[in-house]
Image (cartoon, rainbow, N blue to C red; front, side):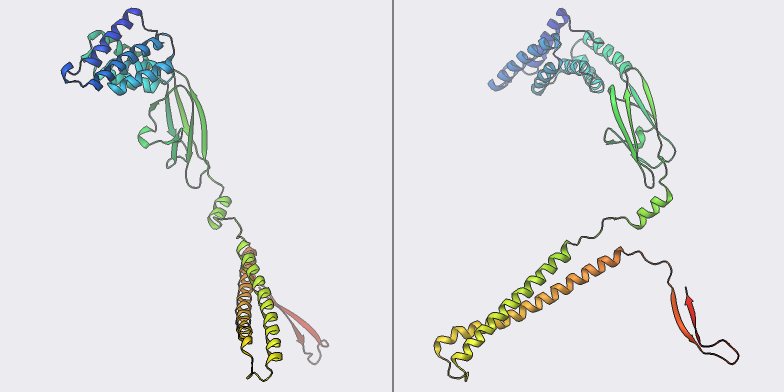
Length: 333
């Protein structure tokens, strides 16, 4: 395991990091805002290193990342990797060490040697998982922790963080595969993905009836409700029509000498007449449509007959010397 920073290394790291944070550009080329930002970054780096010394890895990691947003140096990358390793994120830590090693020549030989030593030690700690295709999994789609696994990652050692990991796989006409593996440091775990064949009867029924959900009866009932309401409305309008007609017949029996104040009543009669006809037509069509929908839905539920039978009862005419009058049952299948 990685030990905490020694006081000598702490002072050395702080001095080098401050020099890298502030010495990349000439002082006269930095604006006042840049100078203030670099000053803040130096103070954050010192605070982050103190948090690292105290073992507060989460807070130290956040502080080092904030410093890296101002200027990412090899030492900042190194300290971020240290915090990630302490938090159990070994794969991310290894990547951080390797990035720091790429620019380690900018610091000093001692720093480069320390980074190389951490990389060598960490590679031995990281567990590996080998996923292999077993029976029925040649064309299966495999996922590791919810991420698709490419063919290049099957059958080879995949470095992962210690702890539980989920592997799933699926393929047509095969039962889904699910497995949970717990990886331990310095160990290599092998997992064979096996997919069992789906029973032929179940596979055939799925192919023939992909949707088992019965059709909804909501639409036919809604249309039927509209039809009933339209018929009721037609009856009401017809009653109003008859009342207006009776009123007009009393006021002008001859239909020619109607008073002027009855013109509105005549308009009401026309409205009631045509309105009742339209409502009646809508009601009849709606009820007919609802009935047809319910009929076809009920027909779909009935299983198709595999065989048909026709039976006929025919009279038997007697022939001389034969049995008396009777009946003959004939059938065809």
